[in-house]
Amino acid sequence: MPLKLITNFVSSFLKRNETDNSTKETISASGSLKSSSLASISFSPTITIQGLWSKKDDQNDMTVVKTTVENERWVAHQEQLIHWQNQPPIFDPYPALGIQDYDLLETLGTGTFGRVWLSKQRKTKQYFAIKVLKKADIVKLKQVEHINSERHVLSQINFPFIVQLYCTFQDHENLFMLQEYVIGGELFRHLRKSGRFPNDTARFYAAEIVLALEYLHSKDIIYRDLKPENILLDHRGYIKITDFGFAKKVLDRTWTLCGTPEYLAPEIIQSKGHSKSVDWWSLGILIFEMMAGYPPFYDDNHFGIYERILGGKVQYPSYFENSGKDLLKKLLVIDRTKRLGNMKGGAQDVKKHKWFRNTDWHALLNKTVRAPIIPAHSNDYDTSNFEKYPDEAKNKQPEGDPFRDLFADF
Ligand SMILES: Nc1ncnc2c1ncn2[C@@H]1O[C@H](COP(=O)(O)OP(=O)(O)O)[C@@H](O)[C@H]1O
Ligand SMILES: [Mg+2]
Image (cartoon, rainbow, N blue to C red; front, side, top):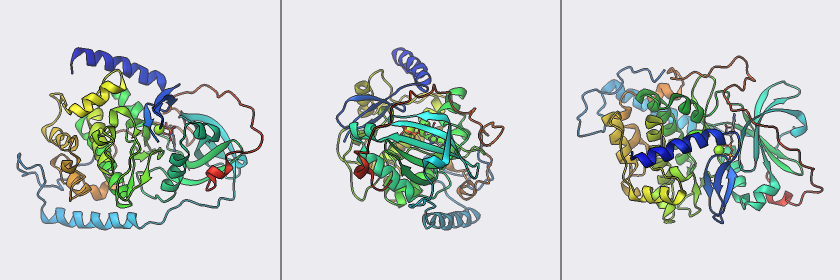
């Protein structure tokens, strides 16, 4: 990484830390800058290695050859995937409770349209995370479709590595999304604390994300906002992907420019129309950022970032393991028809890559492998893994509800 880039990155690194508590950047459909949760844009133990994969793989061929036992495990894993793909959603479309039944205790995160609160249900004393979104802001920033899509997509999902949305409701001013409280905080914070992750740690999180993407794509859902800020750790250190603000059910292609600058796939920048391929690109960016501590395409302005992405030149640090580098070279491919994950074999091509040779996919999805970071917490309402946020200025409640029709499903 040239010196200027390092300097820029260091300053952005500090900014990213600072902005955790305040504003983070987003670009809207009209292309204007606005504040949000870390630079999103929107236009319109380590896996226990049990030798399940063969070690005698050829250096030139990064696809793993499997033994009989491994094949049996693989078949069991395929059945496990089908099981999860067929699980009915837990989401309740007609909840009996409303916001009056919860106490909002503390802010866990802030975003473009409001805050996520640690909340306690008054009767059962159970803890939840409630995402509160201001209707007027959503309308002003032309994000009505995205928010309705966030609800729609999350309401259909039931998967171990994706945050559970239980129900939604609304009042005159706000929309509310009642979610499970994921106590371990953002992967972003753990990554910045560590500087960078060891190879095995990065692989543990990457493998869970691969499973989550495989699940989402099997339902024709693209996620489009993969980044360490949107990945939370649960109390045992497994990931939960949150923030489905840009997720969408797409059968063919979609054209909306949205995502986070450093994580945007070339086809999004080029407005070529995009689909599932963009998630495999951003997986490559994420793995790089986890292993290096900084993203592969970085500049102090968005345009510079886009130029670097389209230029496609990646400087791999010398400490990257060969097979990890090989995987990144196959994910960060500008031509999406040649990008791993987006070819005939789909997610299976990624899972069979040599970097994942010791990954026990079956055990991972069953959460029987030990996670590399077990988040500290002293009780089930502990918020020590989250940043502290200043109190929100209380606005006067608007009279009437001019936007109710726009959010009829909530
Ligand atoms: N279910 C949850 N449990 C704990 N914290 C959460 C949860 N959902 C979100 N957060 C926190 O709130 C932040 C903002 O939420 P997110 O859904 O990403 O909103 P935005 O769309 O504004 O980025 C997250 O980065 C995370 O720190
Ligand atoms: Mg977010």
